Structure formats: C-alpha cells, structure tokens
Amino acid sequence: MRSEPPAHRAAPTSQAVPAHPASPAPAVSSGSPAPAVSAAGLSLVRDHTVYSCVMGSRAFGLATDTSDTDVRGVFLAPTPLFWRFEKPPTHVEGPEPEQFSWELERFCALALRANPNILECLHSPLVEHVDDTGRELLALRRAFLSRQAHETFARYALGQRKKLEADVRTHGAPRWKHAMHLLRLLTSSRDLLRTGSLTIDVGEQRDPLLAVKRGEVPWDEVDRRMVRLAAETDEAAASSPLPPEPDHARVEDFLVRVRRASALRDSVGGR
Image 1: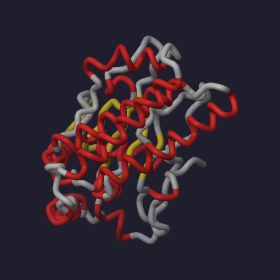
Image 2: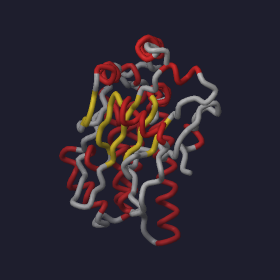
Image 3: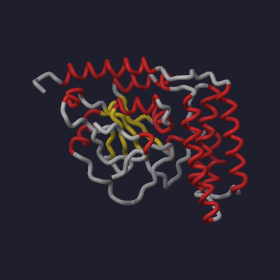
Image 4: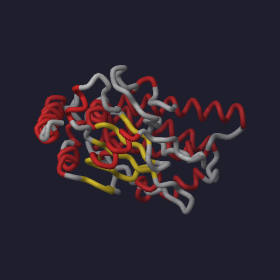
C-alpha cells in the first residue's frame, strides 16, 4: 500500500485506503490495473466529492499525446461517520487509475502547511466538478497562501535536485522529465512569492520546458537555470506581498460550518 510521504502522513486515528504520494510532480502510470478501492472509499468519492480537477502536465500546459489525465479531488465525509470508532479515510486512491482524493479536513490541513501539490490543486485551470461547498473552498484560496510556501516549495525542490544530481553521477544524465517539472515548480514558486498569486499553467515557457524534457538542453545549462531560479525565489521571499502565515481562523470557520451542516443534514432519518 502506498502512502503519503512521512512529512504529510495522516493522523494515526484515521484509516486510509491505498494512497498516492502527495508531490507536485504528476503521477507516472505503471500500466498496471489500479488497486482495489474499498466500498466505503468508493462511495465517498462517488457521492460526496465537492471539488475535482485535472492536474499534472495537462493542468501545467505541458501535455503531449502520451500524457496521462491525473484527476485530484476533495470529498466531504458525512459528519456522523466521525462519531464511530473507525473514522472515514483521510484520502482515497481511485476508482480510476490516475485518480486521488482527500477528505476536506485533510486537504485543508495540508494546504495550510503550504503543501505544493495541494496548493496547485486549488489553482488548476481544469475544473471537472465543483458544488457549493467546493466553490466556498475555492473562494478561500488566498487564505491558504503565505510566505510559508517559500520553505515548502524550496524543500521539495532541493530534494528533487539532489535526486537529479545523483542520476547524473550514476547514469551520466538526469531524468529529463523530472528536470522539466523541477524548473516549472521553481518558476511557479518564484512568481508566487513575487506576485502573491499562484499560476500553474506555464504559458510561453511550454516550448523551452518541453525541450528540456526531450533532453535537448545540456544538463549544465539546466542546472544553471535551477540555481538562478532558486536565488530569485529567495530574493522574492524577502519582499513578498504574501502574509507570514495563512488565515487559519478563516479556514477553521469554514470547516466547522460545513461539518455542522453535514451533521444536521446527514443525521436526518436516524442515521
């Protein structure tokens, strides 16, 4: 069973069905059938999704003919489920091979910690489904943004760069697709800290980035770009218009309100 990385593990009191790593890079299809999804998890995704979007290369404007369609979503588990010893899952993988969803509270907690993948989900230009609760969540996008993104994006970028450098030492070249996505992430992070807004579509950078993916740009040049972008990100953080901390109170008010509404609605009929 795959799970979220150690820094983002679910609380031990919550049960999680098979999970997918919470990282900014799009999932790479293994070509194998998706793992079985529990009936409870399937029901939550099918009946209680409040927001879903397309992520990965398609959302970033980097899709090619062979790109997967990565779907990410948020579901609101009915409040009465939390009154049982066995809690609802914090995340559900599936039912489609490239589909992954978080329970609303877990999603908000990760967003408040400036998890890059979660923040990018909130800003996908490709929304597949949104209901009233999902629209409220999207209206809170700015409440999640803060200068904490500098640390979380930079930490992730550093880890990915070390892996690329190890590939160069071992194999003589990096994994070019990963190098492309790291350049994209560094650019997105820099611009977020400069402007206070998160834009994930690469726009006019599509062709230069795809050239990196094809291995047409020497590693030394790619590495220089990464160093420059990291320095520009640090500089932007020093004068960023973003607040030092996210708006925890506003997000918590939203969660309490939707949990209360769910309790009133889903308790009807002796549930």
